[in-house]
Amino acid sequence: MKAFLAALGITMAACVTAFCAPTDAPIESKLPAIIEIRTKTPEGVSSGTGFVIEPSGTAVTCFHVISHAQEVALKTTSGETYGDIRVLAFDVTRDLAIIKFAAFGSPIIPLADSDAIHVGDAVFAVGHPKGLENSVTKGIVSAIRTVDGVRVIQTDSAASPGSSGGPLLNEKGECIGVVSFKISGEGLNFALPSNYVRGLLGMQSAMTLEQFNAAASKKTADASMFTAGSGDTITGKWRSLDSNTIKVLRQDGDYVSGESFTRDEKQSLGSYDLRKQADGSYAGRIKGSWACRWWSVWAFPYPDWRENQCNTEDQVFFTKVDANRIEGYIYGPKAPPQNDRNFAAFCKTCGATFPKVKANFVWVRAE
Image (cartoon, rainbow, N blue to C red):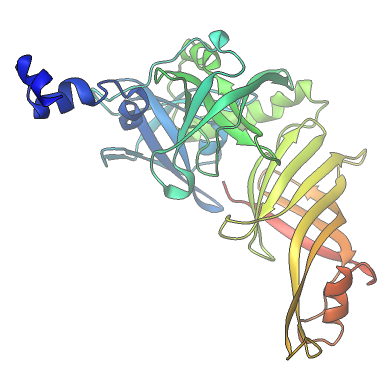
């Protein structure tokens, strides 16, 4: 090999750049255009993702990322921060927003024609899940669907909390979609087609955050025309004031699905499936899988911990729902304290032999 290169007058060092290393890394080259978005709301600070589509600081994110924000701060991959933004356009139904910040010569991600994608195409989702900058996951286009009158791209490319608003890229590094939400179940990640973004670009009208929030409140109320007056107040991330666990919910018309996670969001605790009732409340079930451990003095050859893997299904009700708070209760067996003599019996039967009780909860919006 060295002799061959020498005959061409090329050194091995030159080979590394001229022949051996790929000169085109379309996905990695687009990472400088990704921005982290931090918002301050009455419930606290949350984060999401966005990406720049014009060098002058025009960027795309999800509507729910900046909705209800009192303050917004942007951070670019280079470490620059911006605390003053304008909202140029938004679409509540499609969960999209176009924002503007004072950048010049910013790296960009070009918009592709989302109508040209096909099921099976390779895609890459980029975001800031849990503050981990520029995390890239690869997958394929699993399906192209229409949900509540909105076309969405279903992909198995993983999307975690904090990735909302990030781009879904094709193999050329072009944006074909905006990562919007995830519903309960493996492989059910969704993005809004990039052509919806193109449509919003023709409707730009700079707004302050105060003007945006006022306009968004009215639009949110009007957006329920095609969902039997249900609106969409439930989609998003919620935190339990009782257990500090995290709930990620998705509302599709009268139906709500979602998943419950531990407070660090590393372990799933169960999945939700509810339907809106005639009185405006929601009723359904929560299914969970958990390990119940008890101390056994009869363990052989000496006392030790025993464990039973429980799969349970309990009734769940949302009795009061608004944009920032959900109140309700779960109707199911209540575990006695771990030092109670009945705790072992509860674990062995997964609570099946214990009476069901009403356990109230309150959730507040976390993102």
